[in-house]
Length: 255
Length: 106
Image (cartoon, rainbow over all chains, first blue to last red; front, side):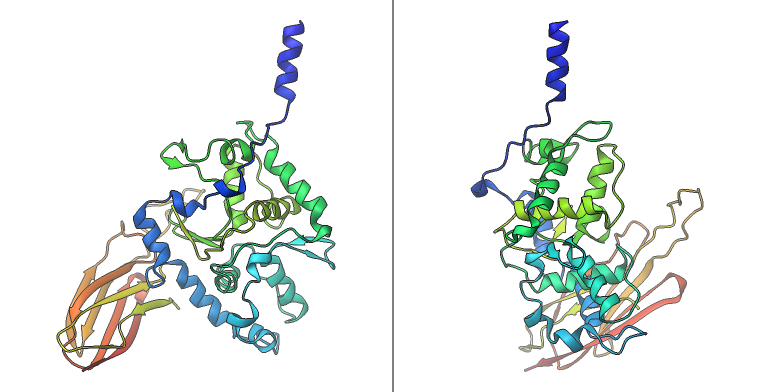
């Protein structure tokens, strides 16, 4: 009986996060094959640049119902948007919680441009996000220093460390404790969101960090959160904080 | 409209070997996949890519369903004269895209 109780107790203990020391963090880039790295490094070959090019057009295009394009207020994105993506998610006073870059774009669209928001994962939203994030390429991620973010950062960490799904796995068990090993034919990365939106060869297109997180969550056979759910944004916030100081690679290419 | 990203050096020396790269956005739907309800997703692929240099064909590729989305071609040619490279992609559902890039040869 005591042994059974001990076993149950052991099972009830949450997965323990073996945090990766800051100096040992590796971008998924470093775990990729050379040919995939070449694809990311060459702007004339990187298919993510197609989305960046489309985003550039959207930046100066007026939505139907509005009189102003992004560029009419923000000017040259290479100046005004430099470093912006490296700071997201940020705390939004009007929302009372953190919002990610996609949500910021849509908030700007509805409030300033009086247009309808882009759907999550729509080509337009990914293109505009990729274009804006491209302006911060090479800049260190700087997320989570705002004290108002503390409870959300803690909630994101809890999401990362909590076992879930039929496989009963927490993010941390693969991405902190077993990175560099293989899951099927794929190398397990540390899970730093350094290049979003990314061009994923498996997707044959560009996708957001939320799409990636939902894929991982359903991969452990858990019910994924809906796009834009607070839990996903908390997780994005925690992951960006966990990757603080690492350079942004947008648009990154991943297998 | 599909986006195409083309890289041709703006200028080159006569006789120099130059690299040309052309990337285009396209779904390259192979026609073998089905929706969750079992309906076949119709094929929608690029069939042909042609590059001409001052009107003369220098590169051509035929494409088939196994080619991945957003096809990318890189090839070399010899810079002979100043003029224009013309790139055309054509495919299913009447797809057609044409781009031109100028080069200065000294």
